[in-house]
Image 1 (spheres, rainbow, N blue to C red):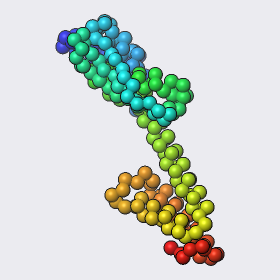
Image 2 (image 1 turned 60 degrees about the vertical axis):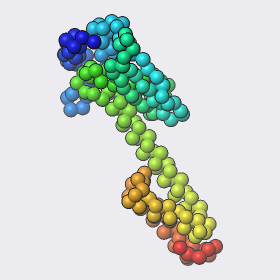
Image 3 (image 1 turned 30 degrees about the horizontal axis):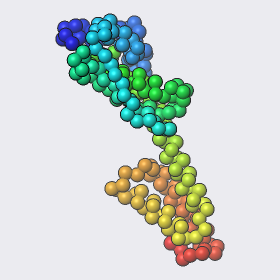
Image 4 (image 1 turned 90 degrees about the vertical axis):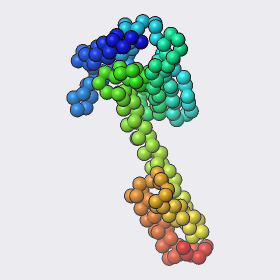
Length: 206
């Protein structure tokens, strides 16, 4: 990879932003992976290759590793990407393909072909989708715990749930629930405990 030709390629990539760049929030632009690949091939032809490998795939996520390799087999650039299946309309049907494009974009970015921003647009959108999915799962877990509280038939069961909330509050525990969510659970447990005290509990109060 000749230094001068690659520096020129990086400059060409930056110049193309004004022509094919996708506008982002804040007025910045981003060059799509396909446009950077076109510039890459125009400069290097088939001298360099890009390989991709599937690192992980299950019903929730997919992870791909991309590498830029020279004719001697040396790795000159690489990138990783992860996508959530079903995170948006594209990932419902093509999570793997989208993830591969993001990984290739990261590999090109590692060579300086980022077109203005190192994170790819797909990755930034993926981060938003991932955060939403995680938040939904956390809320779902909280709903499950609240349902258990409402179905508790004795204070022994409530004691177990109470101890679990105490563990969540411990400073050494990286709790996934926010403080407000923990307070919701604590309130529900206290209300259920009060109901037992006012009724006929099958166990001694907490």
